[in-house]
Amino acid sequence: MPSYTAPSKDMQYVLHDVLDIAASDIPGYGDLDRDFTAAILDEAGKIASEVLAPLNPVGDTVGCKMENGVVYTPPGFKDAFAQMKENGWPGIDMPEEFGGQGLPYVMGTAVGEYFSASNQAFTMYQGLTHGAASAILAHGSEDQKATYLPKMVACDWTGTMNLTEPHCGTDLGLMRTKAEPQADGSYKVTGQKIFISAGEHDMAENIVHLVLAKIPGGPEGIKGVSLFIVPKFLVNEDGSLGARNGVSCGKIEEKMGIHGNATCVMNYDGATGYLLGEAHKGMRAMFTMMNEARLGVGMQGLAQAEIAFQNALAYAKDRLQGRDVTGVKNPDGPADPLIVHPDIRRNLMEQKSFAEGARAFLLWGATLIDAAHRKGDKDADGLVSLMTPVIKGFLTDKGFEMTVQAQQIYGGHGYIEEWGMSQFARDARIAMIYEGANGVQALDLVGRKLAQDGGKHVMAFFDLVKGFCKENAEAEGMADFIEPLKRASKDLQTAAMYFMAEGMKNPNAALAGSYDFMHLFGHVCLGLMWAKMARASHDALAAGTDDPVFHQTKLVTARFYMTRQLPMTATHLARIQAGADPVMALEAANF
Image (cartoon, rainbow, N blue to C red):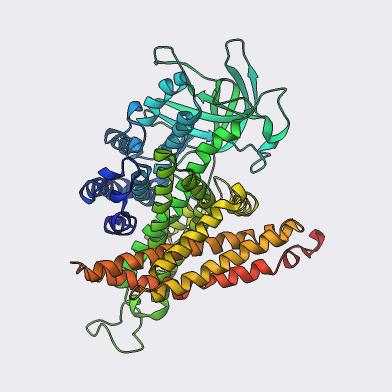
């Protein structure tokens, strides 16, 4: 059975050596010294490895069951959920006034990686609740906040997001779910939603559904969509649970992965709902939840890559196959371990350099969210808005790719269920699809985010990279990292200029290159993170660190990324500059 060890040493390194969070002027960061974050990460690591990870194969093999309209989670899930609640993990970064611990988002992100890596399907129950609570916090009335948030922050009540219908996924303007106004100010919601994660289960007293629906007589298309709070059980004025609402689970989906999470078809039959935010402004409120969810899904890509890498590495060190072509390394055994072979090393280095680079990228993004929310930094808000489709799209594409590479280390043993490696690939696969398929993320990046606020935020990113390169151009030992980063950033700028020049006269030229641009951008972001880590480790070695091997390993891994992965920016740029014709020339009938 696979195992999981929380990468707390690396997490601490990124938080303190690279990001230096305790020195930041973001409110709340001054409390995040090494001892404080170590205590949190150690406790989160224990529950991840000792409680959640052993349940991961149980969730995969047993899955959720539905009997007489009741959905039962896999054995052990209820007890684990109770333990998570008791220790306050679901509300770690939620406001104290509603029962949360009030820590910065960056700490929620750090422990979230542990929980997602050890058991993605389980962690989705509390993750979706967090997103729904955030939407109510941002857009709800004072009464709605008082009614729902304390229970949701504690995860006594869980939450969902209901967007997709059988006939509409990305194009939500086509939705048919209706919300009829009632005399008392409530609405009667009628329709069917599909693919609803955690839509029905047995781990919470109530489930608070956030449902997109149209109020009759409103604007056509997406401009006529509103968002409603539709609880499974109605809530009495004193906060107690009342009558069962007109919402039910029609069935649970049979899926490729995340079997431990109940993915439901939800039927709304005149269910009582309450408007969240303004009428016909539902997407604005829902995007509060979706943007948070997209960052969380990006984390899932990293998390599955991390646990798959850990197990592949252990196997490569233990499995004896063949001899090292340069000389026997295990003379007392019949063969050398797999890890001596160059192609195995290539595979493992690709996994390692991705996981560690992605971790730094994700945590940096979390600090931008904290800067935006905790000190009103509009520039940070704009930058993380630009980065959101890159975090979601690039990290999940590459994360899935890394789980497949980890499987490959095992050969045939990776393909059979006994070793558990297929679960990581199957669970990672959904992250490329939900919360906006990655092709849509790429379109959002090129079609909306690049030009947002007159291109201010992408120019700020270019300046950030340029400034880092200039500051470190003469630093000892940094040339190996600065020069590749400069070339990659130039490729990104050239691609952006191509879109500006060609996009208006031929939109397909931009859209045909959008996916490559998302990956080009992702590589530059990880290149920047590896350059920052290289600088941090150079400084640590110069200062006489008591762990030189750790920092030397960082430098070797950074060089690998710069020489073997970052040059992909040139390939992506060449594809972009090829324009739309190679993609669009073929008539649909001739495919």
